[in-house]
Image 1 (cartoon, rainbow, N blue to C red):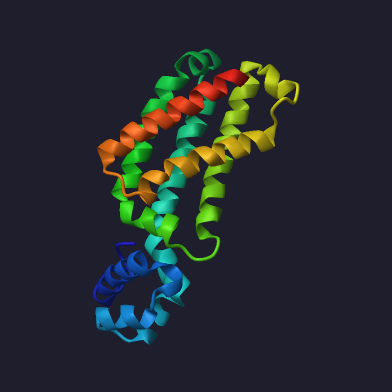
Image 2: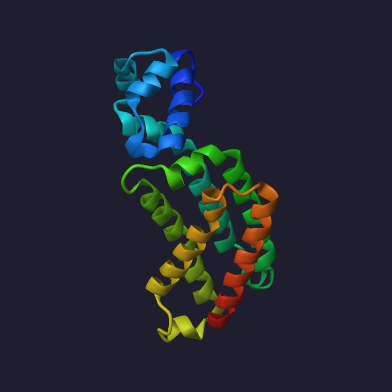
Length: 203
């Protein structure tokens, strides 16, 4: 992103972020953004195609960072020795969520845009991508444990997907409610404890 943010771009992005955060995507005005940035609307169209292109440029680095982090973390867990996974999954998860919280708070404004202010199905698509990664890893872990619940069909891939979706939707409440980081860490710790207790029923 750094190569694009120079001159007009820096002003456009700063005022665009403010406009989207205050009004949401639908009510945000490119004319207002251009006026506040001291450029013409045609300048914005030339650089970002349209309002959605400008919005996506603002948030894509944040969403890509989080998706990549979760994917790498869970892939690393999936490739650990079976015994290590079974005995240390809580410790591994603790380390992973510390990094996830870092990303959320490094890009807090951007995640507010994604979760609270995005166009159309942008947030739902982002959430779905995240859930698919987590659900696949959860399924693999249940299989590796020899989960009778999964083997017998008591729970299935659809169930895993719904539970993972509920977890991440709950996690993002820290952004929705603008929680200070210390409060968010305590909230996420209890949220994880709640879900971990539930998952033990199916191990």
